[in-house]
Image 1 (cartoon, one colour):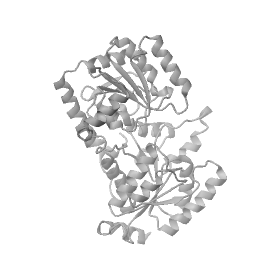
Image 2 (image 1 turned 120 degrees about the horizontal axis):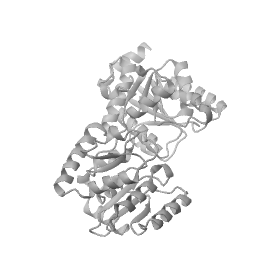
Image 3 (image 1 turned 135 degrees about the vertical axis):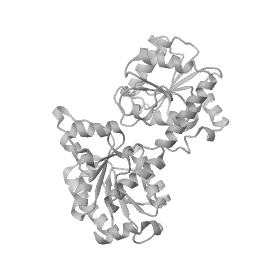
Length: 407
């Protein structure tokens, strides 16, 4: 380990190809699409930018090219399996990678690969970090708790919110001294209202047939029951404003039955003409800009809640349920409102407040919201805090500050 410690001490003076640069291996099932994958690529970029060596092991996927373009390396391994025998084989393959690539630290981001990664890291005597991305299903009688527990067995356990940190402590009885809270980060260059052209907004408004003077409410999120689209439709009916348009943005991912349920509910409540199921959107910054109020209505607590952060980053008032990580991200009364989950009446009341704001009040909310997200929830902030966790293990750095604590 002496050679590893010396390499860490020298990393600030070395370029990306410096032979003594620390090497971090991130492990996940695949690089297809999603928040876990995006976070992996963002951290790889941060490592490369700081002169560290970034390696990602996965079964591959469309984001592999993006990873390699930014100067990181990808190792293709069959890590998208839960087969116990394959997990052991993957442990042997990862141990080989650690030895051949001179890996300084292993960071696992999903349960099945984490079992392989832990075996390999312990065998090769390198630090092991996990990121706990959600509450994970415990299964009947809590039987999956044993399988999930691997995510609590890192030398450091990164929780993506204080909500998740509390869940880890309460569910898995983990000593909080190893937990570090590092909120997910969003790309504040893309989610920047000053960078969305009028043309992009007009294109979407035309595509979605939005009247020029219609107030717009938007709930982004795939069409799945726990995202709470039905709660918003019920709140819209209670709002009793026929001029308002309600956008449900997100794919049904083959769940056409649920989409039909939502349309039937809108018809039953007399708001069919106001509710638009528009499918996926490739330009979400512009979608936020054609919106007056952003809603998150999840019936289950969100581990982070990217919509709440993105909506504020775009200067829009956000309404979110008062559970999960939303209270950490939203400044209720300043950048939006927190309401009881699954309460259409309370959601309707918050919508009335949001839609009744004058221009000066909206600008005040926008300024506060944009500053709040840029200060705390940028991907740059996420990267700095994640790398600090690495430095705790590689350089003996002290815990960063209370942002990284579980309280």
